[in-house]
Image 1 (cartoon, helix red, strand yellow):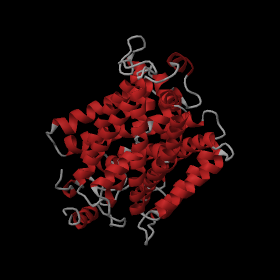
Image 2 (spheres, rainbow, N blue to C red):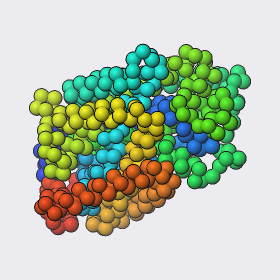
Image 3 (cartoon, rainbow, N blue to C red):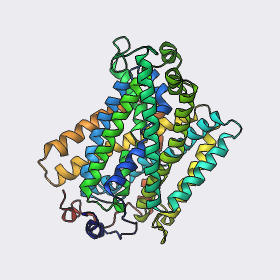
Image 4 (cartoon, rainbow, N blue to C red):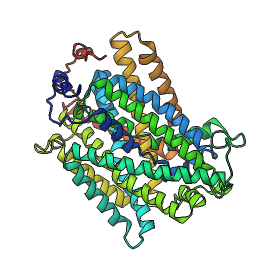
Length: 478
Protein backbone atom coordinates (compact mmCIF):
# COMPACT_ATOMS: atom_id res chain seq x y z
CA UNK A 1 0.00 0.00 0.00
CA UNK A 2 1.32 3.45 -0.92
CA UNK A 3 -0.89 5.46 1.43
CA UNK A 4 0.48 4.95 4.96
CA UNK A 5 4.01 6.32 4.25
CA UNK A 6 2.42 9.61 3.15
CA UNK A 7 1.07 10.23 6.66
CA UNK A 8 4.29 11.37 8.38
CA UNK A 9 5.27 13.36 5.27
CA UNK A 10 1.91 15.13 5.29
CA UNK A 11 2.23 15.88 8.99
CA UNK A 12 5.73 17.29 8.40
CA UNK A 13 4.39 19.54 5.62
CA UNK A 14 1.73 20.84 7.99
CA UNK A 15 4.35 21.63 10.63
CA UNK A 16 6.25 23.69 8.05
CA UNK A 17 3.27 26.05 8.00
CA UNK A 18 3.36 26.44 11.78
CA UNK A 19 0.65 23.92 12.79
CA UNK A 20 0.69 20.67 14.75
CA UNK A 21 -0.97 17.53 13.42
CA UNK A 22 -3.99 17.19 15.74
CA UNK A 23 -6.66 15.60 13.56
CA UNK A 24 -6.67 11.91 12.64
CA UNK A 25 -5.18 11.12 9.21
CA UNK A 26 -7.29 8.15 8.18
CA UNK A 27 -9.15 9.02 4.96
CA UNK A 28 -8.33 7.36 1.63
CA UNK A 29 -8.96 8.69 -1.89
CA UNK A 30 -12.17 6.67 -2.01
CA UNK A 31 -13.29 8.16 1.31
CA UNK A 32 -12.70 11.67 -0.04
CA UNK A 33 -14.54 10.92 -3.27
CA UNK A 34 -17.54 9.44 -1.45
CA UNK A 35 -17.51 12.34 1.01
CA UNK A 36 -17.70 14.82 -1.87
CA UNK A 37 -20.50 12.89 -3.57
CA UNK A 38 -22.49 12.66 -0.34
CA UNK A 39 -21.95 16.37 0.32
CA UNK A 40 -23.31 17.19 -3.14
CA UNK A 41 -26.01 14.48 -2.83
CA UNK A 42 -26.39 12.37 -6.01
CA UNK A 43 -30.16 12.97 -5.81
CA UNK A 44 -29.89 16.68 -4.87
CA UNK A 45 -32.08 17.83 -7.83
CA UNK A 46 -35.03 15.94 -6.33
CA UNK A 47 -35.56 18.73 -3.81
CA UNK A 48 -35.08 21.81 -6.02
CA UNK A 49 -36.10 20.46 -9.43
CA UNK A 50 -39.27 22.55 -9.67
CA UNK A 51 -37.49 25.82 -8.88
CA UNK A 52 -34.78 25.14 -11.48
CA UNK A 53 -37.35 24.04 -14.09
CA UNK A 54 -39.41 27.21 -13.66
CA UNK A 55 -36.36 29.46 -13.47
CA UNK A 56 -34.72 28.02 -16.59
CA UNK A 57 -37.75 27.93 -18.85
CA UNK A 58 -37.74 24.14 -18.67
CA UNK A 59 -34.09 23.77 -19.73
CA UNK A 60 -32.99 21.99 -16.56
CA UNK A 61 -30.39 19.75 -18.22
CA UNK A 62 -28.71 22.77 -19.86
CA UNK A 63 -28.70 24.58 -16.53
CA UNK A 64 -26.94 21.71 -14.78
CA UNK A 65 -24.40 21.35 -17.60
CA UNK A 66 -23.49 25.04 -17.31
CA UNK A 67 -23.39 24.72 -13.53
CA UNK A 68 -21.03 21.74 -13.78
CA UNK A 69 -18.72 23.60 -16.17
CA UNK A 70 -18.70 26.66 -13.91
CA UNK A 71 -17.90 24.57 -10.85
CA UNK A 72 -15.24 22.60 -12.75
CA UNK A 73 -13.14 25.75 -13.11
CA UNK A 74 -13.43 26.22 -9.34
CA UNK A 75 -12.50 22.57 -8.71
CA UNK A 76 -9.37 22.97 -10.85
CA UNK A 77 -8.40 26.11 -8.92
CA UNK A 78 -9.00 24.25 -5.65
CA UNK A 79 -6.72 21.44 -6.83
CA UNK A 80 -3.90 23.94 -7.36
CA UNK A 81 -4.30 25.66 -3.99
CA UNK A 82 -4.63 22.47 -1.96
CA UNK A 83 -1.26 21.36 -3.39
CA UNK A 84 0.28 24.66 -2.30
CA UNK A 85 -1.35 24.70 1.14
CA UNK A 86 -2.45 21.16 2.21
CA UNK A 87 -4.38 22.16 5.33
CA UNK A 88 -7.90 22.60 6.67
CA UNK A 89 -9.69 25.89 6.08
CA UNK A 90 -10.38 25.79 2.35
CA UNK A 91 -10.75 29.27 0.79
CA UNK A 92 -9.92 30.90 4.13
CA UNK A 93 -6.46 29.30 4.12
CA UNK A 94 -5.87 29.69 0.37
CA UNK A 95 -6.78 33.38 0.17
CA UNK A 96 -5.01 34.15 3.44
CA UNK A 97 -1.74 32.54 2.40
CA UNK A 98 -2.02 33.04 -1.35
CA UNK A 99 -2.94 36.75 -1.16
CA UNK A 100 -2.84 38.17 2.39
CA UNK A 101 -4.23 37.28 5.86
CA UNK A 102 -6.90 40.06 5.84
CA UNK A 103 -8.20 38.79 2.50
CA UNK A 104 -8.24 35.28 3.95
CA UNK A 105 -10.31 36.52 6.88
CA UNK A 106 -12.88 38.09 4.54
CA UNK A 107 -12.94 35.00 2.31
CA UNK A 108 -13.43 32.82 5.39
CA UNK A 109 -16.15 35.14 6.63
CA UNK A 110 -17.99 35.01 3.30
CA UNK A 111 -17.77 31.24 2.97
CA UNK A 112 -19.09 30.99 6.54
CA UNK A 113 -22.32 32.28 5.04
CA UNK A 114 -22.34 29.07 3.03
CA UNK A 115 -20.97 26.59 5.55
CA UNK A 116 -22.76 27.79 8.69
CA UNK A 117 -26.13 28.17 6.97
CA UNK A 118 -26.10 25.05 4.81
CA UNK A 119 -26.61 22.48 7.62
CA UNK A 120 -29.65 24.47 8.84
CA UNK A 121 -31.01 24.58 5.28
CA UNK A 122 -30.54 20.84 4.83
CA UNK A 123 -32.19 20.02 8.15
CA UNK A 124 -35.13 22.26 7.29
CA UNK A 125 -35.70 20.78 3.83
CA UNK A 126 -35.52 17.25 5.21
CA UNK A 127 -37.81 18.01 8.15
CA UNK A 128 -40.45 19.57 5.90
CA UNK A 129 -40.28 16.52 3.62
CA UNK A 130 -40.64 14.11 6.54
CA UNK A 131 -43.53 16.13 7.95
CA UNK A 132 -45.30 15.78 4.60
CA UNK A 133 -44.93 12.00 4.91
CA UNK A 134 -45.68 11.74 8.66
CA UNK A 135 -47.75 14.82 9.50
CA UNK A 136 -48.33 13.74 13.11
CA UNK A 137 -44.71 14.67 13.92
CA UNK A 138 -44.11 18.46 13.69
CA UNK A 139 -41.30 19.93 11.60
CA UNK A 140 -39.34 21.15 14.63
CA UNK A 141 -39.25 17.67 16.17
CA UNK A 142 -37.93 16.12 12.97
CA UNK A 143 -35.30 18.85 12.88
CA UNK A 144 -34.18 18.14 16.45
CA UNK A 145 -33.91 14.43 15.67
CA UNK A 146 -31.74 15.01 12.59
CA UNK A 147 -29.44 17.44 14.44
CA UNK A 148 -28.92 15.14 17.44
CA UNK A 149 -28.27 12.08 15.27
CA UNK A 150 -25.69 13.80 13.07
CA UNK A 151 -23.94 15.46 16.00
CA UNK A 152 -23.44 12.12 17.72
CA UNK A 153 -22.03 10.51 14.55
CA UNK A 154 -19.64 13.41 13.91
CA UNK A 155 -18.51 13.48 17.54
CA UNK A 156 -17.52 9.81 17.35
CA UNK A 157 -14.84 10.65 14.78
CA UNK A 158 -14.17 11.09 11.07
CA UNK A 159 -13.84 7.31 10.59
CA UNK A 160 -17.43 6.82 11.79
CA UNK A 161 -18.59 9.60 9.45
CA UNK A 162 -16.76 7.93 6.54
CA UNK A 163 -18.38 4.54 7.27
CA UNK A 164 -21.86 6.06 7.37
CA UNK A 165 -21.32 7.94 4.11
CA UNK A 166 -20.34 4.71 2.32
CA UNK A 167 -23.68 3.18 3.28
CA UNK A 168 -25.65 6.28 2.34
CA UNK A 169 -24.07 6.67 -1.09
CA UNK A 170 -25.12 3.13 -2.03
CA UNK A 171 -28.70 3.76 -0.87
CA UNK A 172 -29.00 7.04 -2.78
CA UNK A 173 -27.63 5.55 -5.98
CA UNK A 174 -30.04 2.63 -5.66
CA UNK A 175 -33.05 4.96 -5.43
CA UNK A 176 -31.76 7.00 -8.37
CA UNK A 177 -31.31 3.85 -10.45
CA UNK A 178 -34.90 2.80 -9.71
CA UNK A 179 -36.23 6.19 -10.79
CA UNK A 180 -34.20 6.25 -14.01
CA UNK A 181 -35.19 2.72 -15.04
CA UNK A 182 -38.88 3.25 -14.30
CA UNK A 183 -38.79 6.72 -15.87
CA UNK A 184 -37.16 5.63 -19.12
CA UNK A 185 -39.56 2.67 -19.42
CA UNK A 186 -42.50 5.02 -18.83
CA UNK A 187 -41.30 7.39 -21.55
CA UNK A 188 -40.96 4.44 -23.89
CA UNK A 189 -44.58 3.55 -23.13
CA UNK A 190 -45.73 7.03 -24.17
CA UNK A 191 -46.09 8.61 -20.72
CA UNK A 192 -45.07 12.23 -20.20
CA UNK A 193 -44.14 14.34 -23.21
CA UNK A 194 -41.90 11.74 -24.85
CA UNK A 195 -38.18 11.95 -25.65
CA UNK A 196 -36.99 15.39 -26.80
CA UNK A 197 -34.12 17.88 -26.55
CA UNK A 198 -36.24 20.56 -24.83
CA UNK A 199 -34.56 20.04 -21.41
CA UNK A 200 -31.30 20.94 -23.18
CA UNK A 201 -32.54 23.75 -25.44
CA UNK A 202 -35.94 25.34 -26.00
CA UNK A 203 -35.92 28.14 -28.57
CA UNK A 204 -39.20 29.48 -27.21
CA UNK A 205 -37.83 30.29 -23.76
CA UNK A 206 -34.05 30.48 -24.13
CA UNK A 207 -32.03 33.51 -23.02
CA UNK A 208 -28.64 33.65 -21.31
CA UNK A 209 -29.77 35.81 -18.35
CA UNK A 210 -32.68 33.39 -17.79
CA UNK A 211 -30.44 30.31 -17.81
CA UNK A 212 -27.72 31.86 -15.67
CA UNK A 213 -30.34 33.05 -13.20
CA UNK A 214 -31.41 29.41 -12.85
CA UNK A 215 -27.76 28.34 -12.57
CA UNK A 216 -27.49 30.51 -9.45
CA UNK A 217 -30.08 28.17 -7.88
CA UNK A 218 -28.87 24.91 -9.45
CA UNK A 219 -25.32 25.35 -8.14
CA UNK A 220 -26.74 24.50 -4.71
CA UNK A 221 -26.62 20.89 -5.93
CA UNK A 222 -22.89 21.15 -6.67
CA UNK A 223 -21.81 22.78 -3.42
CA UNK A 224 -19.92 20.18 -1.44
CA UNK A 225 -17.08 19.17 -3.75
CA UNK A 226 -15.16 22.01 -2.10
CA UNK A 227 -15.84 20.44 1.30
CA UNK A 228 -13.24 17.80 0.44
CA UNK A 229 -10.55 20.44 0.90
CA UNK A 230 -11.64 20.85 4.52
CA UNK A 231 -10.40 17.32 5.19
CA UNK A 232 -6.85 17.94 3.95
CA UNK A 233 -5.46 17.35 7.46
CA UNK A 234 -7.43 14.12 7.85
CA UNK A 235 -6.38 12.56 4.55
CA UNK A 236 -3.59 10.02 4.27
CA UNK A 237 -3.10 10.60 0.52
CA UNK A 238 -0.85 13.24 -1.04
CA UNK A 239 -2.20 16.72 -1.74
CA UNK A 240 -2.60 16.28 -5.50
CA UNK A 241 -4.93 13.33 -4.87
CA UNK A 242 -7.20 15.59 -2.83
CA UNK A 243 -7.58 17.88 -5.85
CA UNK A 244 -8.25 14.93 -8.13
CA UNK A 245 -10.96 13.64 -5.80
CA UNK A 246 -12.73 17.03 -6.09
CA UNK A 247 -12.68 16.94 -9.88
CA UNK A 248 -13.83 13.30 -9.97
CA UNK A 249 -16.67 13.92 -7.52
CA UNK A 250 -17.86 16.93 -9.50
CA UNK A 251 -17.83 15.05 -12.82
CA UNK A 252 -19.71 12.06 -11.41
CA UNK A 253 -22.32 14.14 -9.62
CA UNK A 254 -22.80 16.50 -12.57
CA UNK A 255 -23.42 13.60 -14.95
CA UNK A 256 -26.02 12.14 -12.58
CA UNK A 257 -27.71 15.53 -12.20
CA UNK A 258 -28.05 16.03 -15.96
CA UNK A 259 -29.44 12.54 -16.60
CA UNK A 260 -32.02 12.54 -13.80
CA UNK A 261 -33.32 16.06 -14.50
CA UNK A 262 -33.55 15.33 -18.23
CA UNK A 263 -35.78 12.31 -17.55
CA UNK A 264 -37.83 14.15 -14.92
CA UNK A 265 -38.37 17.13 -17.25
CA UNK A 266 -39.98 14.86 -19.82
CA UNK A 267 -42.32 13.41 -17.16
CA UNK A 268 -43.63 16.68 -15.67
CA UNK A 269 -47.44 16.33 -15.77
CA UNK A 270 -48.17 20.00 -16.60
CA UNK A 271 -45.05 21.84 -17.86
CA UNK A 272 -46.93 25.05 -18.71
CA UNK A 273 -48.37 25.33 -15.20
CA UNK A 274 -44.98 24.65 -13.60
CA UNK A 275 -43.38 27.37 -15.74
CA UNK A 276 -46.12 29.87 -14.90
CA UNK A 277 -46.72 29.15 -11.21
CA UNK A 278 -43.40 27.69 -10.11
CA UNK A 279 -43.14 24.97 -7.46
CA UNK A 280 -44.05 26.54 -4.09
CA UNK A 281 -44.58 23.16 -2.41
CA UNK A 282 -41.37 21.63 -3.76
CA UNK A 283 -43.14 18.55 -5.12
CA UNK A 284 -42.44 18.85 -8.87
CA UNK A 285 -39.94 15.97 -8.98
CA UNK A 286 -42.21 13.70 -6.97
CA UNK A 287 -45.11 14.57 -9.29
CA UNK A 288 -42.94 13.51 -12.24
CA UNK A 289 -42.07 10.28 -10.41
CA UNK A 290 -45.79 9.66 -9.88
CA UNK A 291 -46.38 9.95 -13.63
CA UNK A 292 -43.64 7.40 -14.24
CA UNK A 293 -44.40 4.77 -11.61
CA UNK A 294 -47.32 5.81 -9.45
CA UNK A 295 -47.62 6.78 -5.79
CA UNK A 296 -45.00 4.34 -4.54
CA UNK A 297 -42.25 5.95 -6.65
CA UNK A 298 -43.34 9.45 -5.58
CA UNK A 299 -43.17 8.40 -1.93
CA UNK A 300 -39.80 6.66 -2.41
CA UNK A 301 -38.18 9.70 -4.00
CA UNK A 302 -39.61 12.02 -1.32
CA UNK A 303 -38.36 9.76 1.49
CA UNK A 304 -34.95 9.44 -0.17
CA UNK A 305 -34.71 13.24 -0.42
CA UNK A 306 -35.51 13.67 3.26
CA UNK A 307 -32.93 11.13 4.40
CA UNK A 308 -30.26 12.29 1.93
CA UNK A 309 -30.60 15.98 2.83
CA UNK A 310 -31.36 15.59 6.55
CA UNK A 311 -28.89 12.85 7.41
CA UNK A 312 -26.24 12.09 4.78
CA UNK A 313 -25.68 15.58 3.35
CA UNK A 314 -26.07 17.48 6.61
CA UNK A 315 -23.74 14.99 8.33
CA UNK A 316 -20.81 15.88 6.08
CA UNK A 317 -21.83 19.56 5.98
CA UNK A 318 -21.62 19.72 9.76
CA UNK A 319 -18.18 18.05 9.64
CA UNK A 320 -16.88 20.53 7.03
CA UNK A 321 -18.25 23.57 8.86
CA UNK A 322 -16.64 22.51 12.13
CA UNK A 323 -13.26 22.19 10.35
CA UNK A 324 -13.57 25.72 8.95
CA UNK A 325 -14.31 27.11 12.41
CA UNK A 326 -11.42 25.07 13.81
CA UNK A 327 -9.00 26.43 11.20
CA UNK A 328 -10.01 30.06 11.82
CA UNK A 329 -9.98 29.63 15.62
CA UNK A 330 -6.45 28.23 15.78
CA UNK A 331 -5.35 31.39 13.93
CA UNK A 332 -7.14 33.48 16.59
CA UNK A 333 -9.68 34.77 14.05
CA UNK A 334 -12.51 32.99 15.87
CA UNK A 335 -12.95 32.32 19.61
CA UNK A 336 -10.18 30.02 20.85
CA UNK A 337 -12.51 27.39 22.34
CA UNK A 338 -13.49 26.38 18.79
CA UNK A 339 -9.93 25.11 18.20
CA UNK A 340 -10.19 22.50 20.97
CA UNK A 341 -9.72 18.91 19.75
CA UNK A 342 -11.30 15.98 21.55
CA UNK A 343 -8.26 13.82 22.48
CA UNK A 344 -10.11 10.54 22.10
CA UNK A 345 -12.03 11.03 18.86
CA UNK A 346 -9.63 13.56 17.26
CA UNK A 347 -12.42 15.91 16.17
CA UNK A 348 -13.03 19.64 16.85
CA UNK A 349 -15.73 18.89 19.42
CA UNK A 350 -16.68 22.44 20.44
CA UNK A 351 -16.94 23.54 16.83
CA UNK A 352 -19.13 20.52 16.08
CA UNK A 353 -21.47 21.34 18.96
CA UNK A 354 -21.66 25.01 17.96
CA UNK A 355 -22.64 24.10 14.38
CA UNK A 356 -25.34 21.82 15.79
CA UNK A 357 -26.72 24.59 18.01
CA UNK A 358 -26.73 27.18 15.21
CA UNK A 359 -28.38 24.72 12.82
CA UNK A 360 -31.07 23.95 15.38
CA UNK A 361 -31.92 27.59 16.10
CA UNK A 362 -31.70 28.60 12.44
CA UNK A 363 -33.77 25.69 11.19
CA UNK A 364 -36.56 26.13 13.73
CA UNK A 365 -36.75 29.90 13.17
CA UNK A 366 -36.79 29.57 9.37
CA UNK A 367 -39.47 26.88 9.59
CA UNK A 368 -41.88 29.64 10.67
CA UNK A 369 -41.31 31.62 7.45
CA UNK A 370 -43.02 30.86 4.16
CA UNK A 371 -39.82 31.79 2.30
CA UNK A 372 -37.44 30.17 4.77
CA UNK A 373 -36.06 27.52 2.41
CA UNK A 374 -35.69 29.84 -0.60
CA UNK A 375 -34.08 32.56 1.53
CA UNK A 376 -31.51 30.19 3.00
CA UNK A 377 -30.83 28.67 -0.44
CA UNK A 378 -30.03 32.01 -2.06
CA UNK A 379 -27.82 33.08 0.86
CA UNK A 380 -25.88 29.80 0.83
CA UNK A 381 -25.29 30.07 -2.93
CA UNK A 382 -24.25 33.71 -2.75
CA UNK A 383 -21.75 32.99 0.02
CA UNK A 384 -20.20 30.10 -1.88
CA UNK A 385 -19.98 31.92 -5.22
CA UNK A 386 -18.39 35.01 -3.66
CA UNK A 387 -15.81 32.88 -1.82
CA UNK A 388 -15.00 31.03 -5.04
CA UNK A 389 -14.24 34.40 -6.67
CA UNK A 390 -11.58 34.94 -3.99
CA UNK A 391 -10.27 31.41 -4.66
CA UNK A 392 -9.63 32.18 -8.35
CA UNK A 393 -7.86 35.41 -7.49
CA UNK A 394 -5.64 33.60 -4.98
CA UNK A 395 -4.47 31.17 -7.68
CA UNK A 396 -3.34 34.01 -9.95
CA UNK A 397 -1.69 36.02 -7.17
CA UNK A 398 0.09 33.07 -5.57
CA UNK A 399 1.35 31.31 -8.67
CA UNK A 400 1.68 33.96 -11.39
CA UNK A 401 2.37 37.16 -9.43
CA UNK A 402 4.47 35.79 -6.55
CA UNK A 403 6.06 32.66 -7.94
CA UNK A 404 6.34 33.75 -11.57
CA UNK A 405 4.63 30.63 -12.91
CA UNK A 406 4.39 30.32 -16.69
CA UNK A 407 1.81 27.53 -16.55
CA UNK A 408 -0.67 29.88 -18.20
CA UNK A 409 -3.47 27.32 -18.53
CA UNK A 410 -3.74 26.17 -14.89
CA UNK A 411 -2.58 29.34 -13.17
CA UNK A 412 -4.12 32.08 -15.34
CA UNK A 413 -6.63 30.94 -17.96
CA UNK A 414 -8.59 28.56 -15.73
CA UNK A 415 -8.96 30.94 -12.75
CA UNK A 416 -9.74 33.98 -14.96
CA UNK A 417 -12.44 32.12 -16.92
CA UNK A 418 -13.81 30.62 -13.70
CA UNK A 419 -13.93 34.07 -12.12
CA UNK A 420 -15.81 35.49 -15.12
CA UNK A 421 -18.44 32.75 -15.13
CA UNK A 422 -19.09 33.00 -11.40
CA UNK A 423 -19.20 36.80 -11.51
CA UNK A 424 -21.94 36.56 -14.16
CA UNK A 425 -23.85 34.07 -12.00
CA UNK A 426 -23.59 36.36 -8.95
CA UNK A 427 -24.80 39.36 -10.98
CA UNK A 428 -27.82 37.36 -12.15
CA UNK A 429 -28.63 36.03 -8.67
CA UNK A 430 -31.76 37.17 -6.86
CA UNK A 431 -31.64 40.74 -5.59
CA UNK A 432 -32.48 39.61 -2.04
CA UNK A 433 -29.44 37.33 -2.01
CA UNK A 434 -27.21 40.12 -3.31
CA UNK A 435 -28.40 42.59 -0.66
CA UNK A 436 -28.15 40.20 2.28
CA UNK A 437 -24.87 38.78 0.99
CA UNK A 438 -23.23 42.19 0.76
CA UNK A 439 -24.60 43.11 4.18
CA UNK A 440 -22.87 40.00 5.56
CA UNK A 441 -19.66 40.99 3.78
CA UNK A 442 -19.98 44.48 5.24
CA UNK A 443 -20.28 43.04 8.73
CA UNK A 444 -17.11 41.06 8.11
CA UNK A 445 -15.32 44.22 6.98
CA UNK A 446 -16.38 46.00 10.20
CA UNK A 447 -15.09 43.09 12.29
CA UNK A 448 -11.80 43.21 10.37
CA UNK A 449 -11.44 46.93 11.12
CA UNK A 450 -12.16 46.28 14.81
CA UNK A 451 -9.47 43.56 14.85
CA UNK A 452 -6.94 46.03 13.46
CA UNK A 453 -7.96 48.79 15.87
CA UNK A 454 -7.66 46.45 18.88
CA UNK A 455 -4.28 45.14 17.77
CA UNK A 456 -5.50 41.69 16.73
CA UNK A 457 -5.03 41.97 12.98
CA UNK A 458 -5.31 38.63 11.15
CA UNK A 459 -2.04 36.70 11.13
CA UNK A 460 -1.42 33.14 10.01
CA UNK A 461 0.98 30.69 11.62
CA UNK A 462 4.33 30.56 9.87
CA UNK A 463 3.84 33.90 8.11
CA UNK A 464 5.56 37.19 8.88
CA UNK A 465 4.94 40.57 7.29
CA UNK A 466 6.97 39.82 4.18
CA UNK A 467 4.57 39.05 1.31
CA UNK A 468 6.66 36.15 0.01
CA UNK A 469 7.89 34.77 3.31
CA UNK A 470 6.09 31.49 2.84
CA UNK A 471 7.40 30.69 -0.62
CA UNK A 472 10.24 28.51 0.67
CA UNK A 473 7.73 26.36 2.49
CA UNK A 474 5.80 25.24 -0.57
CA UNK A 475 5.35 21.53 -1.12
CA UNK A 476 7.29 19.75 -3.86
CA UNK A 477 3.96 18.80 -5.48
CA UNK A 478 3.56 22.31 -6.86
